[in-house]
Length: 78
Image (cartoon, rainbow, N blue to C red; front, side, top):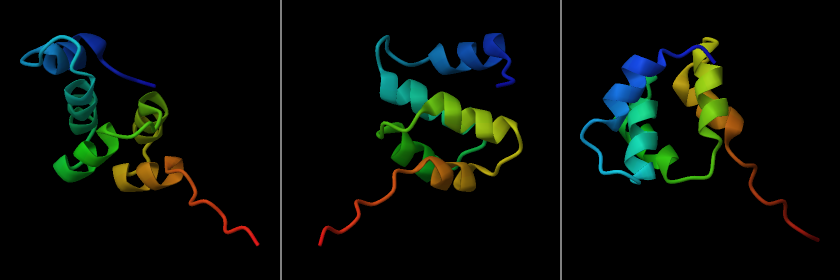
């Protein structure tokens, strides 16, 4: 993943209380080009943030990256 940690990390740590993982995840998603609504929705899931950002860094649109990493619905039994 190609990131500029000093710039993004500073932006994402400033103004958020220590330990606020949800706000930190939202910040990273917004910094990476995700819409506010999608960033809020994804920040509250267990989707691998690093994998998500790596897809976007490689040119995948944010909405498609979220769909790629979204869990599959449970298959019906029976």
